[in-house]
Length: 242
Image (cartoon, rainbow, N blue to C red; front, side, top):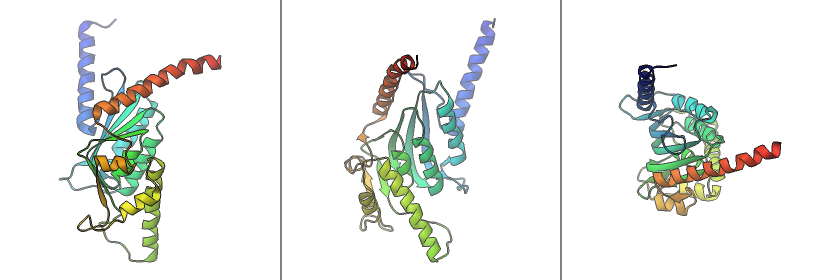
């Protein structure tokens, strides 16, 4: 039997581990509410194959992947809430993370705060339900490249294929059509140095890109309802197996 001092020491160590994890990853392992909800934050630049400058806030691709695997595997985690405030970033990394989120079998919800721009859009629509606050914005624009590239047909074909992958993913995980998403992407006259469209929270919902306006309480309520339904169905499934 453990003494009271040993129990207290273990509790203190667990609290310190949770604090260190939150500082390192910007995520909460498991909330202390009615159900165990993992809170994952995607902020700043989505960093993929190349390291971003030290003065930029980043979400590191290689840090998020193991978190998503752990969320799917850990029986104590019952739902996932993803908080988004991102300017975009590495296209392949962002799309890969979106695919992983879409493949999670537990209830998932995304909440866009501030911004869900560029490759942040596939991430915003990847969950089973998406929310956005009225003051948030989402910038829809074509794939861009900030470095040196070869001006040959093969390069242009690569960009077109990448664009199709993004458009296809977004349209299959939201209510917006590929045609309409492409129209917003290629719109001229709104962005000074680029083509594209900036949508506020209400416009993103009207276009069918995001499911509904709401904040953290709405996203958590959705997750709780999904978990409640799942728990109601589990006894029925067990009885059928018998």
